[in-house]
Length: 207
Image 1: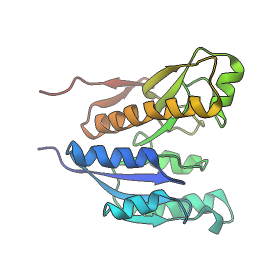
Image 2: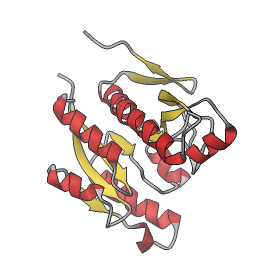
Image 3: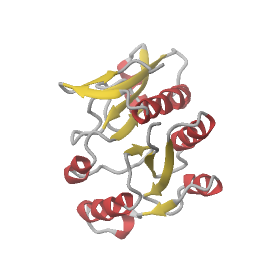
Image 4: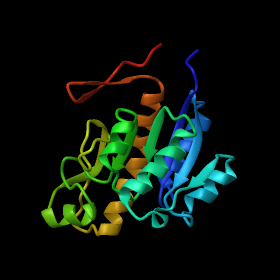
Protein backbone atom coordinates (compact mmCIF):
# COMPACT_ATOMS: atom_id res chain seq x y z
CA UNK A 1 0.00 0.00 0.00
CA UNK A 2 1.32 3.46 -0.90
CA UNK A 3 2.23 5.63 2.08
CA UNK A 4 -0.06 8.56 2.81
CA UNK A 5 1.36 11.81 1.52
CA UNK A 6 0.96 15.22 3.12
CA UNK A 7 -0.31 18.15 1.05
CA UNK A 8 0.01 21.75 2.20
CA UNK A 9 -2.13 24.24 0.26
CA UNK A 10 -1.32 27.95 0.16
CA UNK A 11 -4.08 30.51 -0.40
CA UNK A 12 -4.66 34.25 -0.24
CA UNK A 13 -8.42 34.43 -0.84
CA UNK A 14 -11.39 32.12 -1.17
CA UNK A 15 -9.26 29.26 -2.46
CA UNK A 16 -11.79 27.72 -4.83
CA UNK A 17 -9.16 25.36 -6.22
CA UNK A 18 -8.20 24.40 -2.67
CA UNK A 19 -11.83 23.56 -1.94
CA UNK A 20 -12.17 21.37 -5.02
CA UNK A 21 -8.90 19.54 -4.32
CA UNK A 22 -9.88 18.88 -0.70
CA UNK A 23 -13.30 17.60 -1.74
CA UNK A 24 -11.93 15.33 -4.47
CA UNK A 25 -9.27 13.94 -2.15
CA UNK A 26 -11.97 12.95 0.32
CA UNK A 27 -14.50 11.68 -2.22
CA UNK A 28 -11.99 9.66 -4.23
CA UNK A 29 -10.01 8.50 -1.19
CA UNK A 30 -6.62 9.68 -2.39
CA UNK A 31 -3.57 8.31 -0.58
CA UNK A 32 -2.95 11.66 1.07
CA UNK A 33 -4.05 14.03 3.77
CA UNK A 34 -4.52 17.76 3.47
CA UNK A 35 -2.07 18.52 6.26
CA UNK A 36 -2.74 22.25 6.31
CA UNK A 37 -4.15 25.25 4.53
CA UNK A 38 -1.92 28.28 5.03
CA UNK A 39 -2.93 31.81 4.08
CA UNK A 40 -0.96 34.99 3.52
CA UNK A 41 -4.02 36.93 4.75
CA UNK A 42 -5.91 36.48 8.01
CA UNK A 43 -9.21 37.40 6.33
CA UNK A 44 -8.94 34.86 3.49
CA UNK A 45 -12.34 33.25 2.96
CA UNK A 46 -10.81 29.85 2.31
CA UNK A 47 -9.71 29.51 5.93
CA UNK A 48 -13.33 29.10 7.04
CA UNK A 49 -13.87 26.31 4.53
CA UNK A 50 -10.75 24.49 5.71
CA UNK A 51 -11.70 24.81 9.36
CA UNK A 52 -15.21 23.53 8.64
CA UNK A 53 -13.65 20.43 7.07
CA UNK A 54 -11.32 19.82 10.02
CA UNK A 55 -8.24 20.81 8.01
CA UNK A 56 -5.56 22.51 10.13
CA UNK A 57 -5.04 26.16 9.21
CA UNK A 58 -2.33 28.74 9.73
CA UNK A 59 -1.81 32.37 8.79
CA UNK A 60 1.53 33.85 7.84
CA UNK A 61 0.46 37.41 7.10
CA UNK A 62 2.65 39.06 4.50
CA UNK A 63 1.94 42.49 5.99
CA UNK A 64 3.72 41.44 9.21
CA UNK A 65 7.11 41.06 7.52
CA UNK A 66 9.31 43.89 6.27
CA UNK A 67 10.89 42.00 3.39
CA UNK A 68 10.05 39.20 0.99
CA UNK A 69 12.94 37.16 2.41
CA UNK A 70 11.61 37.48 5.96
CA UNK A 71 8.11 36.48 4.90
CA UNK A 72 9.32 33.47 2.92
CA UNK A 73 11.50 32.30 5.82
CA UNK A 74 8.54 32.41 8.19
CA UNK A 75 6.31 30.72 5.64
CA UNK A 76 8.85 27.95 5.06
CA UNK A 77 9.13 27.29 8.78
CA UNK A 78 5.35 27.03 9.08
CA UNK A 79 5.02 24.76 6.04
CA UNK A 80 7.81 22.44 7.15
CA UNK A 81 6.06 21.97 10.48
CA UNK A 82 3.48 19.92 8.55
CA UNK A 83 6.07 17.63 6.86
CA UNK A 84 4.79 18.26 3.33
CA UNK A 85 5.33 15.98 0.35
CA UNK A 86 3.63 18.47 -1.95
CA UNK A 87 2.97 22.21 -1.84
CA UNK A 88 -0.07 23.40 -3.83
CA UNK A 89 -0.43 27.09 -4.67
CA UNK A 90 -4.13 27.88 -4.97
CA UNK A 91 -4.57 31.57 -5.59
CA UNK A 92 -1.53 32.41 -3.46
CA UNK A 93 -0.83 36.02 -4.37
CA UNK A 94 2.84 36.27 -3.51
CA UNK A 95 5.99 36.20 -5.63
CA UNK A 96 8.28 33.68 -3.96
CA UNK A 97 12.01 34.04 -3.53
CA UNK A 98 14.46 31.75 -5.30
CA UNK A 99 15.63 30.28 -1.99
CA UNK A 100 12.06 29.31 -1.07
CA UNK A 101 11.33 27.82 -4.50
CA UNK A 102 14.56 25.81 -4.49
CA UNK A 103 13.69 24.39 -1.06
CA UNK A 104 10.53 22.81 -2.55
CA UNK A 105 11.89 22.09 -6.02
CA UNK A 106 9.93 19.41 -7.91
CA UNK A 107 7.28 19.26 -5.19
CA UNK A 108 5.43 22.55 -5.61
CA UNK A 109 2.59 23.01 -8.10
CA UNK A 110 0.82 26.14 -9.32
CA UNK A 111 -2.09 26.83 -11.61
CA UNK A 112 -2.00 29.85 -13.91
CA UNK A 113 -5.03 31.19 -15.81
CA UNK A 114 -3.54 31.09 -19.30
CA UNK A 115 -2.06 28.62 -21.74
CA UNK A 116 1.56 29.13 -20.76
CA UNK A 117 3.98 30.26 -22.02
CA UNK A 118 1.43 32.82 -23.29
CA UNK A 119 0.32 35.59 -20.93
CA UNK A 120 2.36 35.16 -17.75
CA UNK A 121 1.76 37.57 -14.89
CA UNK A 122 -1.47 39.33 -14.01
CA UNK A 123 -4.61 40.25 -15.99
CA UNK A 124 -4.32 37.19 -18.21
CA UNK A 125 -7.89 37.36 -19.47
CA UNK A 126 -7.47 41.00 -20.45
CA UNK A 127 -4.24 40.09 -22.21
CA UNK A 128 -5.95 37.27 -24.10
CA UNK A 129 -8.81 39.48 -25.25
CA UNK A 130 -6.43 42.25 -26.31
CA UNK A 131 -4.32 39.80 -28.31
CA UNK A 132 -7.35 38.40 -30.11
CA UNK A 133 -6.46 34.78 -29.44
CA UNK A 134 -9.09 32.19 -30.30
CA UNK A 135 -8.12 29.82 -27.47
CA UNK A 136 -7.39 30.64 -23.85
CA UNK A 137 -7.18 28.41 -20.81
CA UNK A 138 -5.28 27.29 -17.74
CA UNK A 139 -1.97 25.57 -17.00
CA UNK A 140 -0.79 23.46 -14.08
CA UNK A 141 2.99 23.58 -13.77
CA UNK A 142 5.82 22.85 -11.39
CA UNK A 143 7.09 26.05 -9.80
CA UNK A 144 10.54 27.28 -10.72
CA UNK A 145 12.40 30.48 -9.97
CA UNK A 146 11.12 32.01 -13.22
CA UNK A 147 7.65 33.46 -12.62
CA UNK A 148 4.81 31.55 -14.30
CA UNK A 149 7.18 29.17 -16.02
CA UNK A 150 8.27 25.68 -15.11
CA UNK A 151 7.52 22.22 -16.48
CA UNK A 152 3.91 21.93 -17.63
CA UNK A 153 1.83 19.16 -16.04
CA UNK A 154 -1.59 19.77 -17.60
CA UNK A 155 -3.48 22.32 -19.67
CA UNK A 156 -7.10 22.93 -20.62
CA UNK A 157 -8.35 25.26 -23.33
CA UNK A 158 -11.58 27.17 -23.86
CA UNK A 159 -12.68 29.04 -26.99
CA UNK A 160 -12.60 32.82 -26.83
CA UNK A 161 -15.98 34.15 -27.97
CA UNK A 162 -16.62 37.46 -29.68
CA UNK A 163 -19.03 38.28 -26.87
CA UNK A 164 -16.56 37.52 -24.08
CA UNK A 165 -15.70 39.94 -21.31
CA UNK A 166 -12.87 39.44 -18.85
CA UNK A 167 -15.40 38.11 -16.35
CA UNK A 168 -17.13 35.65 -18.68
CA UNK A 169 -13.81 34.34 -19.93
CA UNK A 170 -12.46 34.05 -16.39
CA UNK A 171 -15.51 32.04 -15.30
CA UNK A 172 -15.09 29.48 -18.09
CA UNK A 173 -11.37 29.18 -17.45
CA UNK A 174 -12.01 28.65 -13.72
CA UNK A 175 -14.33 25.75 -14.54
CA UNK A 176 -11.43 24.10 -16.34
CA UNK A 177 -9.05 24.86 -13.48
CA UNK A 178 -11.35 22.90 -11.19
CA UNK A 179 -10.99 19.90 -13.51
CA UNK A 180 -7.27 19.84 -14.24
CA UNK A 181 -5.79 20.95 -10.92
CA UNK A 182 -7.22 18.08 -8.84
CA UNK A 183 -6.21 15.71 -11.63
CA UNK A 184 -2.61 16.95 -11.59
CA UNK A 185 -2.42 16.73 -7.80
CA UNK A 186 -3.78 13.19 -7.94
CA UNK A 187 -1.11 12.24 -10.49
CA UNK A 188 1.58 13.53 -8.14
CA UNK A 189 0.11 11.71 -5.14
CA UNK A 190 -0.05 8.49 -7.15
CA UNK A 191 3.61 8.82 -8.16
CA UNK A 192 2.82 9.12 -11.85
CA UNK A 193 4.70 12.36 -12.55
CA UNK A 194 8.38 12.52 -13.39
CA UNK A 195 10.68 15.09 -14.95
CA UNK A 196 13.00 14.32 -17.87
CA UNK A 197 15.14 17.06 -19.41
CA UNK A 198 12.82 19.70 -17.97
CA UNK A 199 9.64 18.11 -19.33
CA UNK A 200 6.92 16.33 -17.38
CA UNK A 201 6.24 12.69 -18.12
CA UNK A 202 3.03 10.97 -17.01
CA UNK A 203 3.30 7.26 -16.27
CA UNK A 204 0.39 4.99 -17.17
CA UNK A 205 -2.14 4.35 -14.45
CA UNK A 206 -1.30 1.18 -12.55
CA UNK A 207 -3.85 -1.57 -12.75
